[in-house]
Length: 86
Length: 171
Image 1: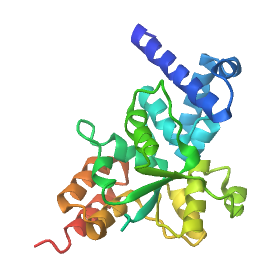
Image 2: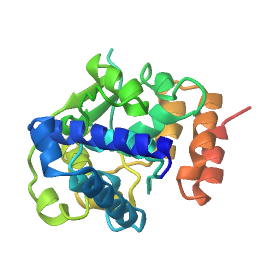
Image 3: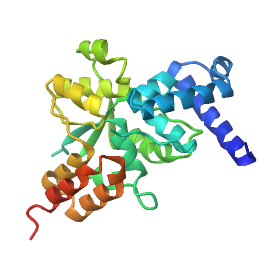
């Protein structure tokens, strides 16, 4: 992974931690202790694949990831991942 | 007189905030005409986010230009039977629409179908734009611009009919 990709991935993880902590009313430190960056990436890509395949909606994707539904779009935009709108 | 209110799912709101890609977002054309209502739980203010929702939608919610309201917890059957496939955001839209009688905009086909099963009459994004033009004073050209710019996000077969409806009555 090149430097820019590494930075973007780190940025996405930190944004996820902020959103996850906010959603679950815990501190960001607690959120980081719960979910590592590599766990986050694995989960994100796995859920994204299933969402694109039609298994569940974007809102459900957000629920399963543990972030608010509208904020998910910023996370996906950062990771350059598309959304299925219908 | 206050503006008519529409309950939007997060996907439509994200589209209106992100498009067009290189100019002022379409949401700015819409909020003067109608009030957008979203379930309360779908957004939080994120200081780290620098992209679209944080820059466009969050301030509008904070200022009350996009209204955010707690969705009722009933009917519980929405969650009981559809909680595995539909997210809390969509279920919130459906419960809010049932409670308020306000029109809702949904595009995910599963969420759309479930809303119909609860007696609602949801409309899709492109039909929302048609309604903005025909009933709420949006300029026809603006409506055409919105649906054309976002057409690739929806089934290709919809666009021609949408443009037909937007051009109906045009002299």
